[in-house]
Length: 103
Image 1 (cartoon, rainbow, N blue to C red):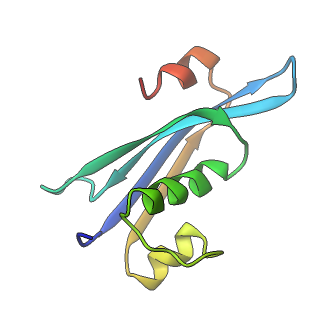
Image 2 (cartoon, helix red, strand yellow; image 1 turned 30 degrees about the vertical axis):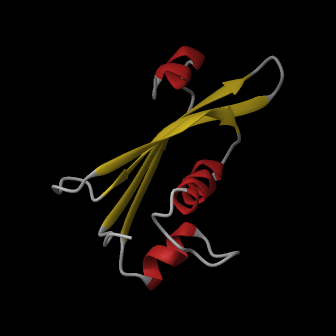
């Protein structure tokens, strides 16, 4: 595993008023602005609130970029390992913007 200095998680969220469900998609950027920058995609999926951050942790663990303990939140993992974590989510986006955000 290479040394991580930053983890950036950006997401867009759409609320389906007809069915009352929220969906999101996003981009995870590791070591933003550095020569070894790496990005991962969070595909369009069901979830609200901070679910995009939980999904980012799951994907980074799955791709063997972090080794967080079970039950540890991403912010806690970053705090323990001296990694800068930046998260942002745009709410009230149009469905087409969320679906096409990462395609």
